[in-house]
Image (cartoon, rainbow, N blue to C red; front, side):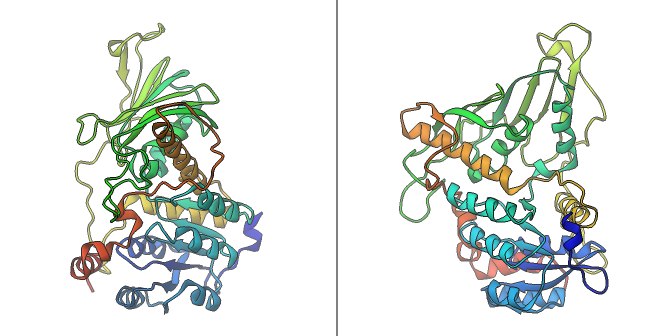
Length: 392
C-alpha cells in the first residue's frame, strides 16, 4: 500500500506545494489548506507579484522556479495550476521529486505524446494524477456513472452530446467516456466549424481562425455510440443525454450540476418521453447562481467541486480509498477523441481508427487556456481578480 510510504509532518499534516500562484492556483491551494490534514508549505511562480501575494497569504516561502522549490521541500501533494503549455513539464517534475499525489488544472495538455508522458510518469510511480475542476468529478456524476453501469436505465442505446467540445474535449467528451464505462474507442467520424487544418481552437496570434467547434460520431469498442452536435455559436440546446432501454439520465449543462433521472412508468419498454417519469431526488438540484461567500479569515469559498476533489485525494492518501474524480488518463482519452474527430474532418470526414498512432499530433485549446491570462487581460485587471479572492 502506498500509504505505508507516506511522508507526514510532525503535526500529522500533508505538505502541499503549489506551482502557479495565479487567479486559479490560489483558490485551488486554499481548498487544500482548508483541509485539517493539509498545509500549503511552498509556492513557485515566475511572476514575482503573484508569488509575493500568495506567499504572504499562505505564510509559505516562494520560489521563482519549481526546481528550486522541490529541492528545498519534501512534498506530499503537488499542484500544477498553470497555462496549459508547461503542464507536462511541471507534472513530470513533481512526480520525479517523489510527491505522493498530484492535482493538475485542465486542459491536460495539447498533444498525445505529452499526455502519454504525464500519465505514464505518474502511473509508473503509483502517483494519482487528478485533472481539473470539472463537473465530471462530482459525487453526483460519480453516482450517475455507477447507475448506468448497474443497469439503472437498462442497456445504453446511445449518448447524445450537445456542445462545441472546446478545451480539447475537457467537458463533454470526458463525460461521454465516463458514462460509456471508459471503454476503448473504435472509430470516429468528425466535423469542425472552422479550419480543420488549424492546430489551435481559436486565433492564437498567427491570424488563423482556428478549427472551432468539434463534433461528429464516435463508436466505442463496447458498442456504445455517441452523437456529438453543436451548431456554433449559441445553439439553444446543450448538455448530455444518456439514453437507455429503460430510462435516461441527462443534464442541460456540461459544466455544472443538475442531473435528472427518468425511468419507465411500467414494465413495458418505453417508446417515447410519455412512457417515462422523473425520479425525484435522485440528484442534487441545479443551482441558479452558486454563491461564493467569504469566510471568517477573509477567503472566498473555493467551490464545492474543488473541495470534493481535495477530500477524495486526502482520503486516498490517508486510507488508500479509491479516487472517483476525473484523472489525467480520463483527460488523455478525451483529448484523443477530440483529435480523432478533427483528424476525420481533415481527411474529408473519413473514419479515424483508435488508438491514434501519430502521438505527436497537436491540438491546442483556446488562446485563454494556452497562454498566460495576465498577458491577455493586462496586469491591472488580472491583479484585481487576484485581490478579489481574499480580503487582505
